Image (cartoon, rainbow, N blue to C red; front, top):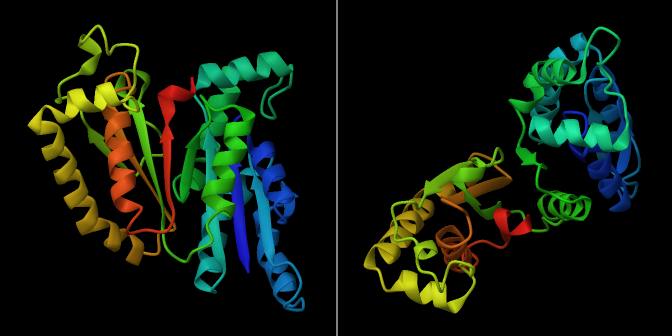
Length: 286
């Protein structure tokens, strides 16, 4: 059987992620105490083989504190028994979460007359630390639309048809922060910057003019060769450690020229070696 646990701070998109999994044929349960999970798994295993054995469980701040504390132990126990259990943690920057609560006029589950929203968000972050620390995938939804979030969850959870590891190459701008879902980060800010060429400033790494500019500088290809060599040496080790997903984030200053170009080149190279290679340009989705 397969079990996917969706967790994260309120307002980060957990309900949308669970709805997507339900649409894809998972049996979804929201806010089930994790202490009841072993019994649920036992009952599912007793079902005939033709029955749906894909479960998705929502775990968040509505669960009791003691229940959250024992969640890692329960999950590791299930994994040790042979259950494929993936933990997906959704998060967003606090100003974004505050804005979402303001727009929807929803009440945070931990807020009350004595606890304001920001304090509740901080309490929730601390409460969910045991879950976030063991997550297989962390997704920052700050810059994602609902459609983009559903697409990302589908590609990284549902769209994995091979038994190999899924690899996401992601470009980003350091000026907007390092992605929280990054497993490996490479910094391209030492390369020549097309931004300072007036004719290239409004273009991106997807445009041939920017590619020509970068290819004219030997250090660009040397950087690509060095990153590719590192990944060729170490991605097999990641895969052997039973990782299902690896997010490789490539950053430059603004996330629109150098990093975009490099992500496209690396994805093209590694798509020949891995069955599930995905690309995301974070700053172009703003």
